[in-house]
Amino acid sequence: MSPSTSSVPYPAEFATTLLRDMQRIRRMEERAAELYGEGKIRGFLHLYIGEEAVATGALHALEADDAVVATYREHGHALLRGVSMAAIMAEMYGRAEGCCHGRGGSMHLFDAATRFYGGNAIVGGGIPLAVGLALAERMQGGKRITACFFGEGALAEGAAAESLNLAALWQLPVLFCCENNYYAMGTALARSQAQTDLCAKAEAFKVPARAVDGMDVVAVQQATRLAAKQVRAGHGPVFLEYQTYRFRAHSMFDPELYRDKAEVEAWKQRDPVQGFSARLIADGLLAASGVAALEAEAAAEVEAAVAFAEAGTLEPVEDLERDVYTPEGGA
Image 1 (cartoon, rainbow, N blue to C red):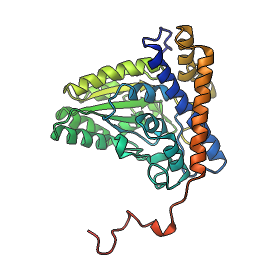
Image 2 (tube, rainbow, N blue to C red; image 1 turned 180 degrees about the vertical axis):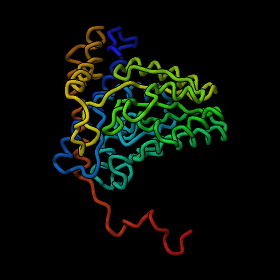
Image 3 (cartoon, one colour; image 1 turned 45 degrees about the vertical axis):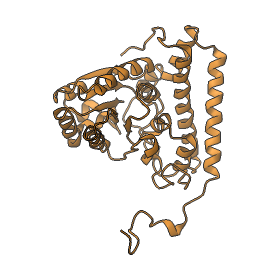
Image 4 (tube, rainbow, N blue to C red; image 1 turned 135 degrees about the vertical axis):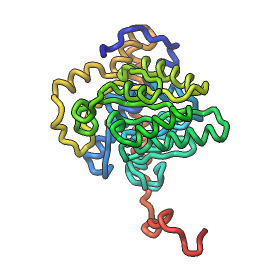
């Protein structure tokens, strides 16, 4: 899919917000990689660098009270849903001040106040949860929708097929957001799935589907807005395939021996952050100095979040069984 060169169809304020949020995700992820190398962040770490247009465009097309379910590559989704960068960074540090009190770490960010329901480490594990949230909304007579993000590898899971089927059968308000970065961990799509047309998979369950340029934040925002409107109107689920690419390895443990370096470099030429910056400048919506100011603003927010995490506290050892075992005599 070729990169978009069209003018930006937004007022300067909203266009600048989209760029600001992509930069916030990018800088937070780059800093997290540095901190992982320093041993400050432990465990697993899956970076979103290269895919920022998807989370940014999609989340800016949803309502504030919609539910969002994500995968283990979810830092950007949590940030734009409203979880503070400080709480996210503290969680990755394993600090008690994190959004899950340091118990979840990078892959399990969660915040009920912003209706962000994971951070789900199991491939495809969030998809049936999203269907359950949508069913609950339907039973309670609400109008909110549930947006569920997952990778293309999740569509090989039986739970994905069952969830698509139930959502279509019961016409549930679910927006299925497939982030197709073409490599499920280290396996190319064509090596693991006989049907590589992901929209066809959804349409087999009578779920309307559309492929979207996931490197273009405008295309993502517009497609998601229309799809969310359709779901919210009571017409049942919709499936969007965001065709995107991660510039980094699957995780910090991944030696990345499965894809050609030339392929990675070719995709980097379509960098969603740099590309959108250039479009804003070309359209006269933002000056080059304005882009630099946004970058400095994002860097300052990141460093403040790191300082917050550094100053955080570890959970006391005597509390480690809290929420794991029921206290004696407890209900």
